[in-house]
Length: 556
Image 1 (cartoon, rainbow, N blue to C red):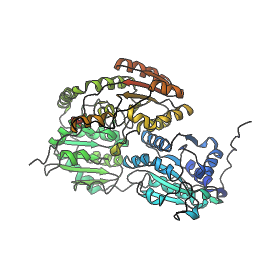
Image 2 (cartoon, helix red, strand yellow):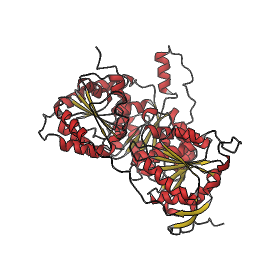
Image 3 (tube, rainbow, N blue to C red):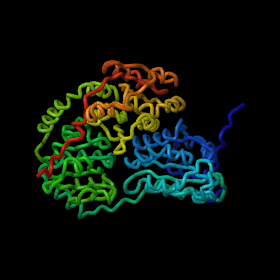
């Protein structure tokens, strides 16, 4: 029997009769969405029918678990900076995807969830409908800043537009639209999808710019801290760093904003030293969590904040100046307002300090050797996705990163198991570059079932699984802090090579950095499906002394 082919979509008139689902899909397409990551189910049958009818205007990437759909959308959003969409059924489907939605909130990622609902008239009545959950809207409202329910066909396009706009207004983040099972398929007269609109640019406070510029010009030991909100302002950050001869500290989401090969680009341990010496810190799109909560602030340190969220700058302490809005235009105004005289170069000083810090970090030699093999084969523009694993923690300190949005890390949720599915979404969205996922044997099995998705949709993601037969970080803590009372941290694993091969993936085992590099070279050449490389490892040196470091300010 021949498979049915989707009909060519008819042009949408000013007011045409269509279903709620067709209106929503049309609005997504009108706003430039070309992919939806999804797992089908009865509550969303009419939505999937609308996706079928839309033909090649929007692709549906179906996953093997709701968490996979949400993580793929998250990875695509982080790797591109563009809004991404996923869809799941209500109740269990929503809850299965909630960890990724929570992570999207913590990482300010523009992810839109389309979530089904029970019949409209039954919502809130506790009748026991399939997938019913008490106060689903209330649960959603605690995970995102914007959520709404589509109640009729005529509302669909406008609510899609509102959600996409809200996701890019102020602090970026996820949004959710609910729709009941009997509303998705309901027909009505629908106006053409709202035109694509961007959020209005916030007016830059010129007085705050002048105040910040004066402070920066007068600072003797300035330090810049770049977070995820600086990802789209890399050129401006680099220019300001050169003007001020200010080191740029980045940890996790800010990695790559300033090329790691620049001596002024520093990671956490050297950044802490510089924090202790600085007379001014400029935080760009960052919570300044480590500095303000662990390293200390005092009267001798002025803090200037640039942030899209007006509530963020005063969260820890009132700043010397706060500039609210998008980092890129604000930094351009700051640069223009600064005096043009050149400061003495700090290159020699920073090169010496970097070398000294590398000497301290050399105790992490096993991780360094493996990361050097990875960096040698992963192209400069290739995307690296870390995990909550010994190698992941080391990579946050040690892996050189050259470009924005090429180092993806799960933010303050730091949720074990996010990596493989998130990297799969990053690779799907960035088909032009290799994406590498690293994982421990514990975290990989959280979403390793999505190997089936990679095979089904020919997504050429490479994963390196570092296998120590344990939840390694948990076991280390039990050994070192709890008198070696080891519990619930040893793991029974499959043969990961044969496991991946059973899905149809290419897989091999690498026993040292040289074998890993050769395996990566082969894997990155494959562009028609996924690859897995297993690396057996023993317990590695602890990186914690370089992450959880004591206070350096306000000690008196």
